[in-house]
Amino acid sequence: MRYSSQVKSISYLKAKAADILSDLEKRREPLIITQHGEAKAVLQDVASYEEMQETLALLKILALGNHEVEEGRVRPLKDVVERIRAGEG
Image (cartoon, rainbow, N blue to C red; front, side, top):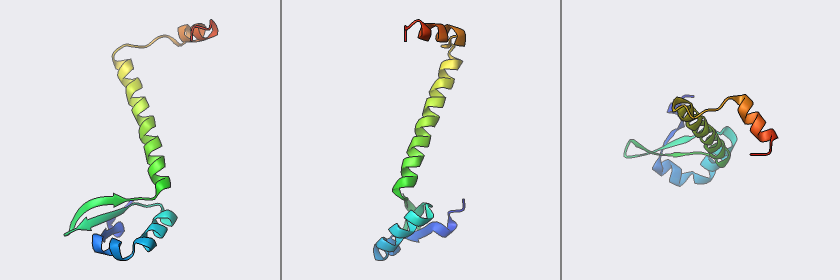
């Protein structure tokens, strides 16, 4: 995704806030807000933000799992299934 078309100044945001919010919801693309020519913030719709947070949570779980594998904190699947079936959790 190219963000160059989604860059607006803070004065544009102030003048067109309602239009921008409507557009964010429809397009589901983030908007980069600049101040004095420098990128200062990213504005996005709530649904996209929530999806991003869920994705980050899943990636964190995967990273933690990979870390446990690297440290050798693993058990054979057969042993885990036997424990579950035996009611040991």
